[in-house]
Length: 140
Image (cartoon, rainbow, N blue to C red):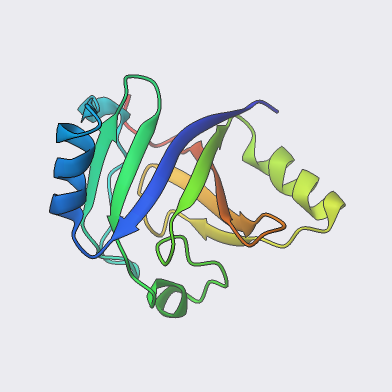
């Protein structure tokens, strides 16, 4: 099971303003469209999201939504305060790893993205961590 840093999610009530800041002040650029997930706005999170990158790591600038966890029935809400995300090549093995360590997680499946299977959990200080795997059905 391989695991690597994929993106940092920052939430805001002003996604366009945050997008301008990271582009104009921090020099971030556009992510290639084929690297972006298709957002599914019908399953409980319909917020706007902008995507920027430094060329290696993505930033997902998402509209803050403190009610997304309630609407989806999930304990962990990744768009209330933001999160850090890792990608894996074997999500089943990673879930088994969390189970063995006694770490509970929320399995969002493809609720927010049609192309990724996502799980979310807390680190010891309450920061939200995402681990996801690209679905077999995602476009190439």
